Length: 271
Image 1 (cartoon, rainbow, N blue to C red):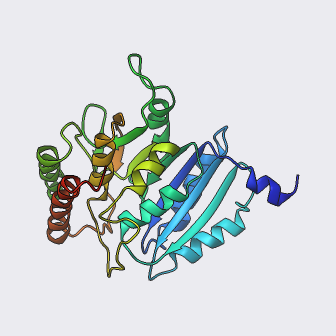
Image 2: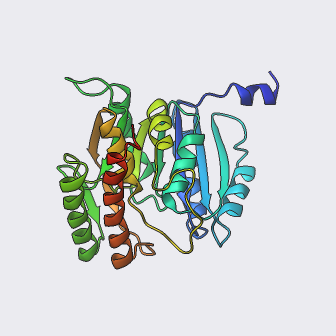
């Protein structure tokens, strides 16, 4: 079989999508850890790095890793997608829609939840629990029994709990942590849900600077509305210095996003 024919028939079991904005300093370690983990699995996999118009060498470093590690063939394949700077929501969306895996996970570039936590999420998507079948949407959670947080500033934890309280009052009533950057979807669910995004969808504007948004709330709200079963799984999470969160600006933007989600629903945009 030719290399081209093999590439055309490659059907990965898992795709890992990593959105990245000005992450040049993290890329070598992150790519090494994720690639090594995927190589250790007994299934074919795909690694997608989606660059959010970085001003540094994030995309160039990722492409260099791809070439050096020969990740254009074998059981682990890699692609780098270069976007204009439209924010994390748009970046994740484009990666999830480009993914070919049967299951598709997106993870923050800092690996604040270690990549090995895939093993905690995948069984719920593959088999489900004793009483229920597989879950099309399985999300990592920093809350609940079994979750562990390390090195998180007190103000960040407080911000998160206040935001979640608002989310539960206005939009999604049963999820304790909508914002953990470690979420797994079946391919079918990912295609359906991310295509329906409105706030940071296909027409998202080019922006300046880092932009933390409430896109997770929109995706989970659409999943809830469309009847997808969602499983929340406690995971380990570690705060790293260099966070792009602006406590005041991003809190206001996220609150505004929740209101826009409800307004979009009232207008029938998620039907």
